[in-house]
Length: 415
Image (cartoon, rainbow, N blue to C red; front, side, top):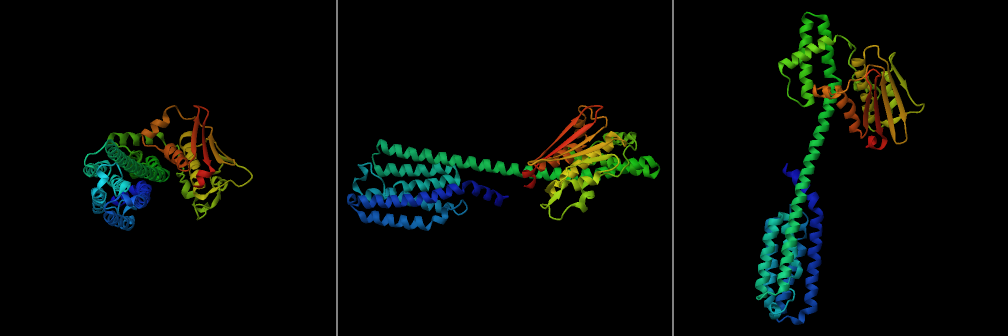
């Protein structure tokens, strides 16, 4: 966790550290040139030359220290600020008139680089501490500070604290973003696993429960246990609490009363399509070939004359979503319901529509099903299309069937 946080911080602060390194070099050159053009005003130029030589060597030697937060240690910050304060306090010794004139100090604006390093490293509190020491040193150096001195001191103090506060806000935002990305990734993985469970385990348990109830005897007990596990697993997939024994019993009874309306083996689309998919998930795959595996006496496929190509992983998800829609037709529209699959190939997207002539879905039934842990539409259909950057629209009219429209943008599906 600490390593990840350090990387996140460096990603936010790296431009600031680069700017600080450039600032230190430029202000170092400025301080040296300022002395060169005004050296005749110094009573003791040797003091100024000695300090500036140390400052130049220190600045160039410590450039790696201001490359990132990890290298900028507290020891370096203290030594750097000490050097800046020393230069300020040595100014009257090199220039006796410095206390009576509002001229620059020996380090000049290079001192602000030390304060900014505190701000970037530790935030506004560290910046306030360093800028306060610089302010005290400037007041001592002037003896009787003027309005310009107070103005410059206040400017450095306010600017450094503001920069430190911005850095702290940026760090907090970056941590929040990283946490949000982790939650999103975990949610997507959970939804993917839930889809796999829905397309395989839950349907197998439902089939065992129905067959066991129909056969009776010991098979009925096995079916009852399978029904209990199905209800419990659906509740777990939905993210709720495990159901109470009464709700398990009610769910099992409801399944038993439903009868063997759909005794066909569950349609695990991924298993059925495994042999038709290329090994490379990014290799183009004809969606028509995958959807053709669903064609039967009750399922009709209407397709373009040319191949409808999508990356293999996207084509598999689209076919699995269509298979989930057909599973819903078999379970809820009855064994005699007819279904039609329409494939449309457009330059910017592929549209797959699954329509049936069943009784339709009553209003509010989908929300109720999600509350019960039946996530076929939410996960197996809409979840798959959302992961591909597409959408799944469900249109149903009671007594007139249901239509599921799957839209897959080509660019997003390829990514």
